[in-house]
Length: 350
Image 1 (cartoon, rainbow, N blue to C red):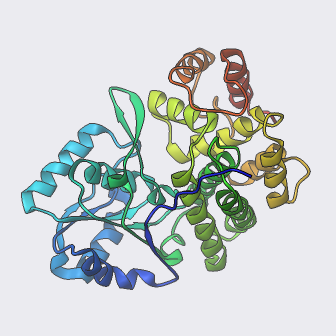
Image 2 (image 1 turned 45 degrees about the vertical axis):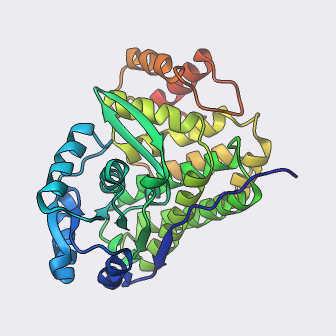
Image 3 (image 1 turned 90 degrees about the horizontal axis):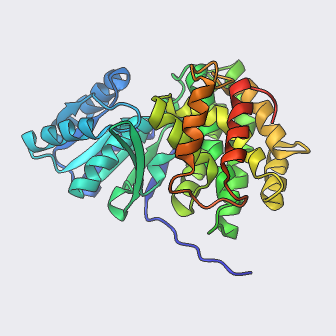
């Protein structure tokens, strides 16, 4: 057995009500004037937390949007400069975390992130950003948030049409970690545990969105998925989702939730150990089939056609996906990718 394992240095506080420790954690990081980042939808929660921390809230910036457009980052940097902010307090999902990361990448300011979805990106040193309609990724130690507070009480307000895709997005991180080029036993154990936790919690959340125990389990699974995403490389799933999301401005979580059954099936024969791990975690005979069945419960969109794409768009996406390809256990060919996209376009079982 040969492997390399690098642990990313993040501080994690997990538990219901843990948002009460925000001021204490800001002090630990030496942040006296934070830029408080959120999306417009989360601005109320951000204002509530800002009120609780008093003068440590230097300026509010409720302008985060999905895919982290560079022009939004530039606007946020002006807000940072206007009050000489010395740190970022990000409250929300992947869009908010992405903007905080983009600021930190350019300024090296410390970050405290409070996730309100199951995105998991708060545990990674990876930034995805868009410019001129193309999404690119960059990895740098400066991007990794120093501290993350996981409070499942803050995810309870998510409606099921958000929590379901958000959880499937986290599962996608763990699935790809199982067949990553640089996978290792520690990450593989985390990935399987993540899929098991999310696979058990999401059906409950679809039926009972206010179930705090299920939210806690899902958030735990999302944390593990984020650790996986930050520790090893990703493959065809993330490449195709970055392509589709960045090119056609599709919802980040929805496209991940829709595509993960098809991308995992693409690697079904090339990664048998990973498929066995997924099947164990979900209690099914076949991993991709189990993911597809879970998607039918949890995803908000069940086909690329439903998301508004055309078959001509599939050709465009297949061409872009072959540019600067990621490692993948099965060779990535245009024919294979186009066939996969067609199945997702129709929404049929992979």
